[in-house]
Length: 258
Image 1 (cartoon, rainbow, N blue to C red):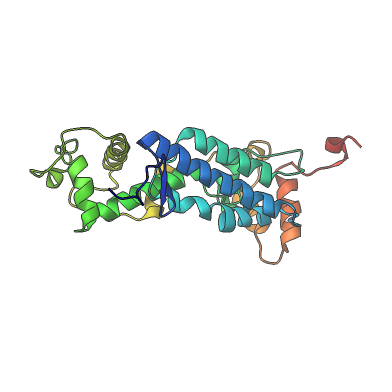
Image 2 (cartoon, helix red, strand yellow):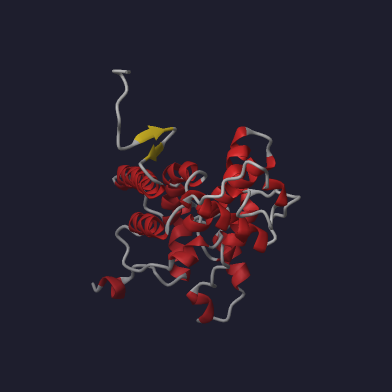
């Protein structure tokens, strides 16, 4: 009856590519985010960024910021996390022969790292925080979540149970339920207190990074070493050179085989 109506395989609304089912929505939305991430890094690859800390700042400010919005709405799967990490590693270590493990890069500067956020933990934390925010409000979004989660979580969160709860399952809300149960198990939230910050969730979701390998090779006061390495009296290039020397990844003649 309406000539202007037509059927489509997918529809983009507020940056989310909705497909015919949950898995196609997940695939299309994260694939687009990955392509934008690659393009962003490619545009910065031709610029003069001689230090690791400069590349980390580009990642944090321009590249990863394109991921955080989608992470609040759709969970990040292991496949896409691996792809994002691969692109990150290529951009960060471009042209360098010796590299550190990503776990060492995730560590804060006062522990010998560069403070690059852990992508998986950060995405999980954003998704969980958004869910807690919705459950704490009296709004249509909460009633929508309540409809799907009332029955599965009736034991852990009795306040979600109403006479309008769905008795069927939904793949997306299975992932939501798993995240709620994880938050409850970690005691980050309770059925009476849903006020938790993204930073708190991120810290709890992030495994403690192992000490840099160089720590086991020299018996030094490493807290003092890291403090001096991040001294404000050093310029960014000097700090990068010292960082590489301390971590034993500086490109000397032996490594370059000159």
